[in-house]
Amino acid sequence: MGLSAPAIGARKVRNGHDPLVMVTAYDAPGARVASDAGADLILVGDSVAMVVLGYDDTLQVTVDDMVHHTAAVARAEPDCHIVGDLPWMSYHVSAEETVRNAARLMRAGAHSVKLEGGRKRLPMVERIIAAEIPVMGHIGLTPQSVHAMGGFKVQGKQAEQARKLIQAAKSLAHAGCYAIVLEGVPVRVAEAVTEAVEIPTIGIGAGMHCDGQVLVYHDLLGIEDRFTPKFVRRYADLKTASTDAVRAYAADVRSGAFPSHDEAYHMVDAEADELLGLYGSD
Ligand code: KIV
Image (spheres, rainbow, N blue to C red):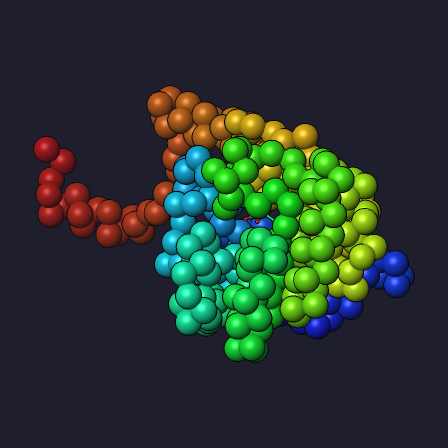
């Protein structure tokens, strides 16, 4: 299972710890890659909507979708802490529904859940934690608020907005969150938030002063190549490698080079001869 939520909650860089490494994964092969590579946390993110399911934003995925993908990741038994992402509208209606939805992700194999938003989410955060489920916060550019924000825009560029983010982080930490994702905020704001709280901040598009970093699997591997945000570093170009491989396969099928003799199953000669006897050669 990797690190527990309380162990992650103690991982402040300023206290001498290494930065936390989180990566998204949505299925068993991705979970095995993350685990073999030594990631501390796997986030089964609602980004699955955009990088796997073909939607334009994250609003389309449901709790059923997230349970399906969380269970696939958990079945790989990665040596990582698995964070299940609560999708839009799964923690907005009532406390009862929120706790039930968080529990569904836990029963699917998550070790904690993540939800987006600051102070207005505090009642739901408290109810989930009261049900013994660890919660990771997520503030700044919160993709589930894409329409309210007027697009995927960097948040906290004005001092007053930044002050509100620092307050939100303090409130989430006070409510019992064990870590906070900081997405799409200026470096100076991420630094101030990280200084202000005793729990680790995990940044994405938030610069180098956070207590950890998270990237989307398909972005860092270059599987998703239609749009590259400024903060993404590509460590591979698997879209090109995959396209080249499938193109080579197609060419081999069309030329007859695939499959070869060794890539097929064969009968022993006596059985093949008998078959020929049964059906003849015409
Ligand atoms: O869903 C996701 O992948 C996320 C990360 C971008 C933090 O929430």
